[in-house]
Length: 116
Image 1 (cartoon, rainbow, N blue to C red):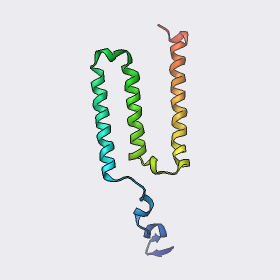
Image 2: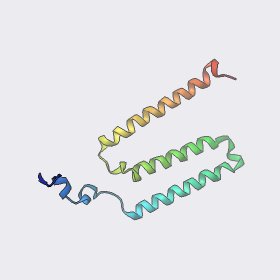
Image 3: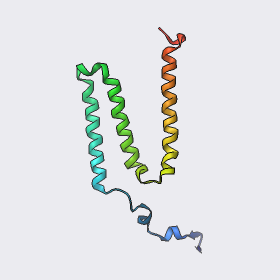
Image 4: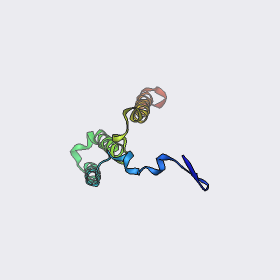
């Protein structure tokens, strides 16, 4: 480590940025993911207008939204290329928050104070 003027020059600054990110996907992969996200979004909009899907429209939309979430997190937030422990730091709290939301939904639906 050396100093040049007021700035500190570290080894990390001299190394090319590509070394740390060699395992990332190509531009073509990102374009494919973007096209898939666009197609799923179009399906989400289309599903609303199909009458015979009315009984299952909410679960269907939730599944499609979850799939889009996973794609965005894996590719655009680069979680797919991070070490597993770092991915666990993100996924663990996400699972706990999802379970907590489901418990609250069930409790609100079954408590007499919330009944109509």
